[in-house]
Length: 166
Image 1 (cartoon, rainbow, N blue to C red):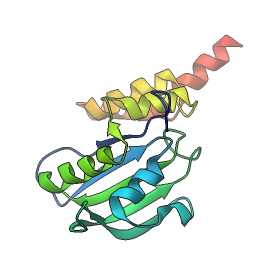
Image 2: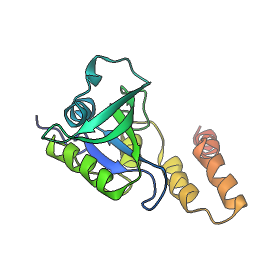
Image 3: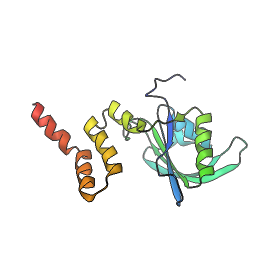
């Protein structure tokens, strides 16, 4: 199915690369649930929104890649405003690469840096000031910068600006 660039299903690892117990992968877009279904074999399309499900990711030969948790969220009640599936898997680069590869084979594409946040802006979930606050939050080097970023993300500056515009 053809979708505009901002509706195409995207996938990315949301946790930092490197050693650790778990990794989080996010799939978002028009076909997110279908693509997660194709990568897992689990019938996610029939399950209610905002629920967590245990399952496995399997490769094209039916071999289990990893045991995972699926966090299933139907749009528009998601960060991006689109259907979203977050997959928590073991943080092994081979597992992560295989899951991403399976999702891409099923029709997703690799997300560009900041693309989930861009979609949240496009779909009216956050404004540009809040989007910038996310970037500042991620890169905050002091407690004060962290607190300021959190305040901006909650909409304090955006509310102040809206008051001035009236």
